[in-house]
Every structure is written in C-alpha cells, then in structure tokens.
Image 1 (spheres, rainbow, N blue to C red):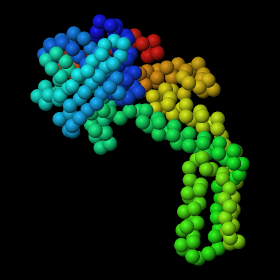
Image 2 (image 1 turned 135 degrees about the vertical axis):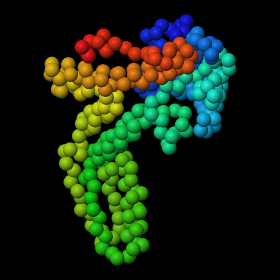
Image 3 (image 1 turned 45 degrees about the vertical axis):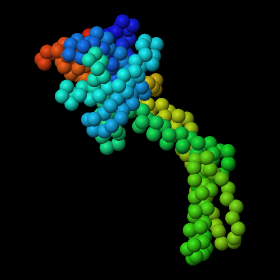
Image 4 (image 1 turned 30 degrees about the vertical axis):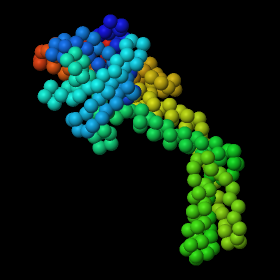
Length: 276
C-alpha cells in the first residue's frame, strides 16, 4: 500500500482503528482518476471536520513515524468523494453513523458504550469502598415527625447534598431535633462483591467486541465448547469487521476502475482453520 508498510502491517493498523473508534480513514495519493500509488491509514483523532450535511471540509493530519501529512479535503458531490487536489483523496470506512447524536462524519465508537458501563461499575466500586471506610449501613429511611412542607423539603435537600455521590456513601448525619428517626437498611454480602464488579468490568470489554466466554474464562472451557468458541469468534467478532472493511475498499477500488462492477475483495473461509 505504501513504501514503508507491507500489506499485513497496513491492514492491521486499519482494523485497529476500525475496531476501537468505528472509523477507518485512508489518505490515497496518486491521480484521483486512476490507480492510487500510496495508501496511508490516518488516525481518527487526526480528523477534524467543519460544516454540515454533505458540505464538509475535513482537515486530516497523519503525524506518525511513516509520514507527516496535512491535507484539507472538500466533498465532491459529483464524484461522491472527499478530494484535496488532483492527487489526494480521503477514504472513509465507517461503521454505523447515528446522525441524531453525531455530526455525521464519524461513526459511533464501541468505546463510548464501554466507557459508560465501566463508569457505572467504577461508581459502584467507589460506593462500596466508601461504605467500608465509613463503616456504617448501606442506606436507610428517615422519619421526620412534622407536617411542615418547607421543613421537610429543606431536610430532603440537606440529605441529598450531603449524601449524593459515591464518595459520600455511608456517612453519618448529625441533626438537631427529637422528631427525626433513622431506620437503617442492612447491607448484604452481595452489595460488597468487589471481585465480581472487577470481573464484570472485564466482561463488558469482551462482550462489546463479541469475544466468546470460553475464549476468556478458564472455568467456562471444555474441549468441545472451546472449539465451538473459536468458530463463534470468527463468525461474530472477526469476519464481520473484515467484511465491512473489504466492502468499503471494494467500493473505493471500483470508483478507481481497479475492480470491475462484478468484482470484489473477499477471502477464502476454508483457509481459516477454525472454520474448517
């Protein structure tokens, strides 16, 4: 694809960005009407877009050990491509793009959902740690013997401000008055399962990338289901990404007349040991 990378290294970098960010960007050099002479994978973090709809202007840099690129691409509606000049084109291979939550030029990243779930689990771990350090019950019920709405609302606000956040879990509250009663809700062993939370965090990552359980857990392995898991790994995790990338590259090469409309990039599934 370029003078500094062989195909294996190049496709590996392309797939890494595709898996992690949901996007793969390629800067193609050579006469835009003919076969490109060099292809460089560009990190998604190096892509900045301005504009809206199909009127984007994209600035793409590629600051790495291979080459330093800095090009401004404009969408050519007639050609349906992002072109910088007569010899430079930007190829985008995205996964699903949610136009209601993104600016429409980058796809949703699987890391976003992973980070959200990990944040929930980390908050749970922080909550449990605070409970251990503060040494009191998980939660409880306050009984305030008053009918004064303002007093009750103020008390609720004070409680919320004092106890909100995982770091405040288990704090004592000192309040003046004889008409306030606190009834604790006892903590169960399950509420403090720190190890389980850690394992769940690990599973979140594996599950989002469709890695079968027998491939990552020794207690879930038997000879039979490990063989099946290898098949599922390729069927659910590996080949869908490969198919998606090959489909995008096929469309690009067809526009360049490198491939005929009846031709496409593909692979031989019988050459993969796990699928035999």
